[in-house]
Image 1 (cartoon, one colour):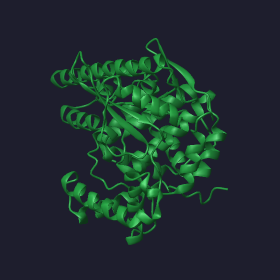
Image 2 (tube, rainbow, N blue to C red):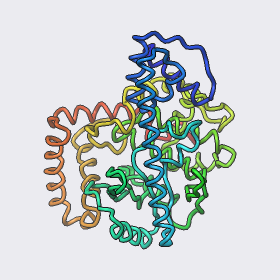
Image 3 (cartoon, helix red, strand yellow):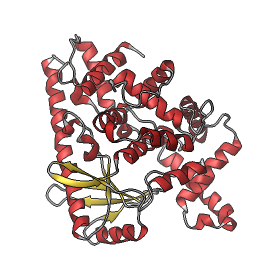
Length: 398
């Protein structure tokens, strides 16, 4: 971890703990710091520390754009909620303005699209028909857990994105965790909490389920493309505001059953060390500090999740060895993602495997713009990252 990264983490720590400290930043350091903050979508956090007038003016301008984006997303979220409420569609708001509300200045939290979860099939189908009848068009992105919709706002001409989730997160190669996630977030297994954001009430996940969802959300991004400091900030602010309502014993049980307790431990301890999460929150959980340092260094290198170019080969878990069988397992999973209905028929698998392979090779060249050898090397490197978290491994836990 270099000096710029250490300085940046001190600023993030001050932001998360709402404290200030005298940090002297020279102009050359300021430029490097700004570049890092931009890749982490956290530029407004530098406002109290940058003294150079020309650099500060640019940060203020970028901050105004982020604030404008926040209110555009907020209005889009409100539009969707009003449409669903008027037509008796039960839904749950995920992330977005819901998490931004816990920041000291909500507008400083970078927003991208709107995520809505509907865990009832009949209700989901009704929502789909309603959206299509009200000017939304389906996105052709292939996903195993949501359907994307595009909406062009008449007043601004901006195209907004809604992700309507029928699963809370995408499928894992490790099948038992899929069942646990489905059971925890199934219809009628919990009652939504209500959260007020800008004088508007939204149904959201209860604090314990929300915490478990955030862990899986981070895991998915870490496995697929990496994520930056923003999701750790989300976790820190959320726990700081809701820890008295979170059943941490239940979190431990779900994580143990999912074999991701090591992931939860390293996230929690990293948030304590670098973001100032109080030690009193789930105080029994700890993790190796050197591994936490390696973890957050990797996150700083990854950049923010919204900045990722999506060039990584999708990985669904960590492997001791990478061989032909590993690639076959990943390919088989992607076959099921691409063909969720046809994939239920084993007789069709050879044909579907072939089609999936052809699509992969085509996308690898046209979208990733990489050779097959480069992509597979990157897959091996990303596997080393996931091994740090000991994903789907509960050894040394009873």
